[in-house]
Image (tube, rainbow, N blue to C red; front, side, top):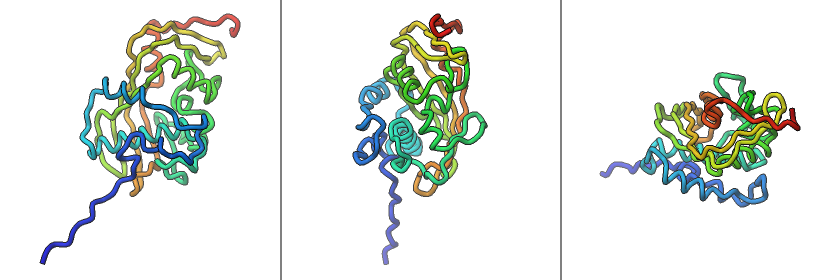
Length: 233
């Protein structure tokens, strides 16, 4: 008598394909259509540090976060987010107060993670202006998993986010001043650690992230200086 076959667990498409949610044609996209990530994915393949085997825990975590980022940045209705459990999802930065998905939908992903400084202010930059500011400075901003320390339901991992400062940085700081830093054409590379709590279907219930919010600006302006637009002073 042969042993019964064990069913192979299935994983959601967003855990197997970093671009899965871009196929959600019925979703409400912030700019009408799904965004184009082809340039970012090209830079990722050319400059990534790690090559995770397909189906590995590292690859699964990386795919889920990439799809979550697409949804958080470009899907304007929480009901269309497939990577999270909308009834439980929260986002926590550096041990602070939990933020709801609605908060991130309102302020944007950059404003959810950055803090007040002489370079930038989450209060003085809205969702659209924040994305324009960083997209203009770094046309591509790739992301990868470096290490995974634990598996579900609490997945702890180290990550890297990188790009090239091809254009000037222009944004509004904590004094409501329009500031500028001349482009240096060099790399910007930030790292952090995240603990993602997921359910049995690999939907995110909680994201806890730790990193230095000023690490990007320390690389944007190595002398910590900005040019002030006198009209906004």
